Image (cartoon, rainbow, N blue to C red; front, side):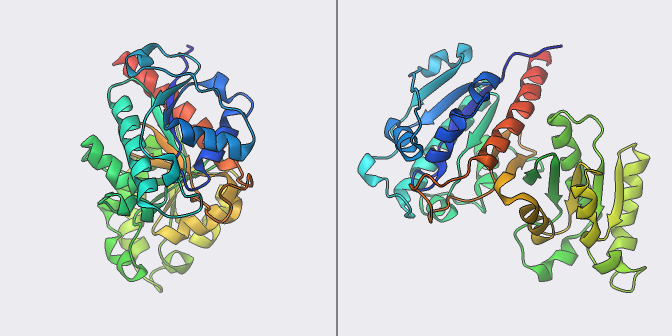
Length: 338
């Protein structure tokens, strides 16, 4: 069965960073505009800025919001979110954060209305977002609140065909152990499985990382593996889920690197992030896991140190786009069947 091409909304991210340049490079990459219908959202001068920085063309074919439902190819939905003189390349500004949030809001509105099947955003600057009124821990919490979504959701990191989810995220290490609960581990496993299935993997193999050195060494270095992780893994297996572990965290990513698993459930932020970034920083992708619409972005930041210099590597943005196309295709098909 073939599905109609998905429609993807793309926003530039912070105009002061490398986002506009990256999107210009993305749109000029082979096969991109053929694999999806694309709606660019944002200010004309920001998109032209990206084209100038990348020394590549962008064709801005204006479209009205009323026509998006039948849009084909590459189109541009105009917005006025920031004055040209307020774009300060390589600087954190309130105006840049405001531009980011307003474009994001519009993209989420289109997705909620069923006019687009997924959202890709260029890198945001969290300081700029906060100064512009983010009022949330991060953009993922902001999106959930904006969408009125109260279910479980969490940032997912992706490198090529490998995904990682986290039981805990942006907290101090001293708080991690007390947050490792059966419910939290179950949610991280389910999020990995659900997201991989959304991306087209029917029976993903999910490896659960241990918390303690040597997976606790039979309780010598802690009992979290014995008391929490092993029972959770067995319960998942009893439900016919393809879950294994807990594996020592210093070896589980060797299995992942060899392609033996599709996802690793990590216990805390750096346990997975260090491994993923060492294996391929310039290809890393972040997915807003659990939200009712597919959302992805390159995992790196706004890179103010190279903004405006045509030195930004499009690899992670291209990976984010390709993954989003797969997820959005399934999202579109599921919507059509429901």
